[in-house]
Image (tube, rainbow, N blue to C red; front, side, top):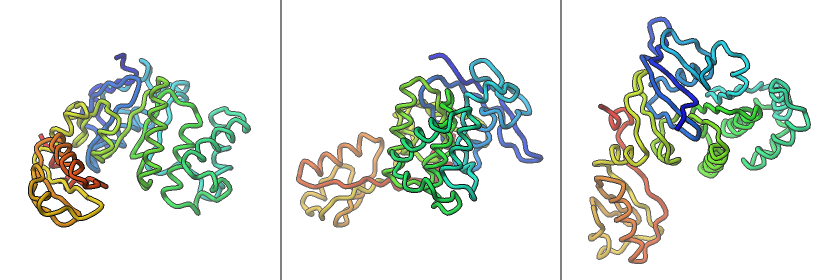
Length: 297
């Protein structure tokens, strides 16, 4: 796979605080995941890749060009940050028309694209509401729309599903999969394990400003689920005669079956056992340690 994005030993400091400490990664077309706890350096890394921050040392290259100095290149890169980048006193419509003009789009094209994206995210009804009056989740949907108006080749996402409900988050995930299939390069920063494995992509683990390792989604789950406790939710209480024989059982409490597992395969085994005996499984919840501990070296 050709690397569209290269980060080589990048260091970035903010007075006495180290944001990045020799971070290195290569990413090509499709979706790449960066996962790490709060304060790990995810946002700083995205801002360096997007050309908003100049590294103190090391180098960032997109298509073999430097995004910090190359204005033409930055037009091909879009960053969805954690601050929405919307004007609260303007309506959604005026916000999107403004950013569309910055991207060089015709007003008609901007409105058509915006309406299509907002409709797919169940937010079209807010088109004439002021951005400052919107909920955080709706603001996030508008921000996603704003970031896509430039039709970017490289899309940098900082916790893009923050404040979104599960249905809306899934719609965003599907939208990103379509963009990846078109050949875009997408870097998706998150601290959620379920999102890290959602796309079956390369996963870069960042801690204390360093990329500590690269994993596949299966390897990630194999690592972090080892020894984890999982709660399986069922629609109705499971009969005692069935519950006591659930594979990997730790505890049974009516509609909640708690199992201790060594890998994600154990979850499938327990769920299959319950379903084969007439139980309707409605959810699986992970009782996880803190991400920092699970991804510890």
